[in-house]
Each structure stands twice: as C-alpha cells, then as structure tokens.
Length: 131
Image 1 (cartoon, rainbow, N blue to C red):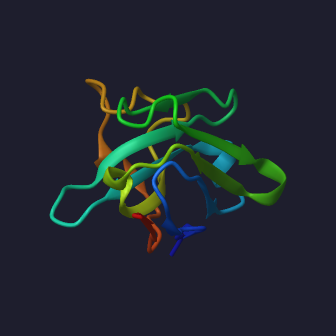
Image 2: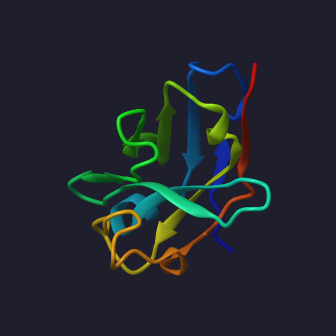
C-alpha cells in the first residue's frame, strides 16, 4: 500500500519557521498534484496548499497565503512545505497526500476542491506553535 511519510514538525515560537518534508512514491510527482493538509484538535481536516505535477503551479488557502510555500525536489521524491511567520492557530497535525484525479491543482478550498480526491495519506507530523 502506497503511503507518504511526513517529517519536520516540532515546537516553535510564534513568528518562527519550520520546513516540513513529504517523502512520496517515485511515480507520484509525475502523475499527481500533491497537497498539504492540517487537522487541529476538534476540527476537520483542511487543505492548505497544493503543487501541480508538470508545471509546479501552486495554490494556497487564504489562511496561509503569503506565509507558507510549497515546493518539490523531483530527484529526491520529496515535497516541502516552508512555513514562516507561524501563529498559534497553525498548531495542528500536518499531512500530505496525492490528488488521484488531477495532475494540476484545483484551487484550494475553491468550488471544485475535494479532499476525498486525495489518497496515500501519511501518519502526519505535529506542529505546535507556542511561546
């Protein structure tokens, strides 16, 4: 069973930065858009970013736009999420997954965006933003 592996989480002070990594299957970056998601305690999982296969176009949720950046290294089969200017409300478990329906990202949280299009979920990595 294909499963991605997230890493890089930890405890950081407000205003700080973290970079998360998502190790993906060798074929995934060629065929699928890759999304990042998060789930805070008591809340539903939400999409926060996406990077397309091919042209590397990206999309971000309004809540992280301008602070988070997703990128990928095809040679390392890894997708990254650079998180800057972190806030306490960014505290959550962060996940990555593949959009099995689209190679190019649909607008995150837009009218055609569907979390259930995504698969290969990892175990997640905890990010805690606190002083």
